[in-house]
Image (cartoon, rainbow, N blue to C red; front, side, top):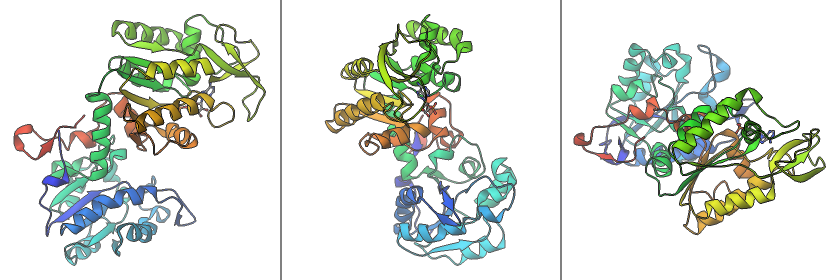
Length: 406
Ligand code: AMP
């Protein structure tokens, strides 16, 4: 359970908002303003309610103060996104920030310099967090994507000031809650991507929570190999075969049905438009590699999902970056998008490559929710408690909460 900004009294208050404005930039110019644009809603809502809105964020991975990581380049796109001039201070603590904030009027918005210019930010230093807290009356965390880090501006502040989730954080927590914590059943998860070894915790958590675990991508090869099949020159972590068998056992005990491909698209090389053919997973030639799930497998996945109410998705079915090995990912993604449109399936997806795979399939904005939070989304799928979210939890008796926490 976490508090939202609905329950905060912000009029005339200095509200410290932790956003994630860590956008891509080149030659001192922001090249993609998506994160800034999405963050604007919380800032403008607070400003409209009469708050003095003070934005904290990080940009890149500076080691102390490094000019190339200055956030000054964000002022212009942020001003555009919030529809008013955004004031700027060259440091997130100290006299310049204090003077700027003292001069703010209700409804003003200011951006402070990179919190990571201070090493104590990432160490969650108490004195640093306290100094930051001294600049505000209330704290709003709108940066789910950094919530897996216990830093001063993502966790420490929530312990020092009245705290609430911003609208982006709220949307993410609500979507994730509906997908795994209290989903409509049956619930399925698709886990694809390259390797089992990078998704062990995730697989372990999901088998305990979902009715169907659909495995795709390179990691499916490891499972097929663990079942005694020959996978030719496919990407395969042979040393993970025991682990794969343990996951299959764990799934059986948890009554989670594992769905593996039955046919595969194979090619002799990992290259765009490499000659390919469809084979049974029992007949993968020694000199070929599996680069996608086959059409019968995609059909079987769709059949299975037809009986489900909820789908959580991380990782593609194949090497989606190169044609024609994006076919299974596209077919399932487009079907799931249509099912979502019909209101018959809740679809939540996320994690680096998944967002680009869904964008490539043309359905990025047709799922119920696509998380761009990367590492934080994956840690949540792994069932880990995210410190930035945990710090926003409130006891039921303290009021002003809503039930959507993780
Ligand atoms: P991940 O970051 O773990 O979600 O993995 C995504 C990557 O897995 C993408 O770059 C895909 O090209 C790759 N991938 C998926 N299936 C295969 C496969 N059968 N063989 C090789 N790479 C694959």
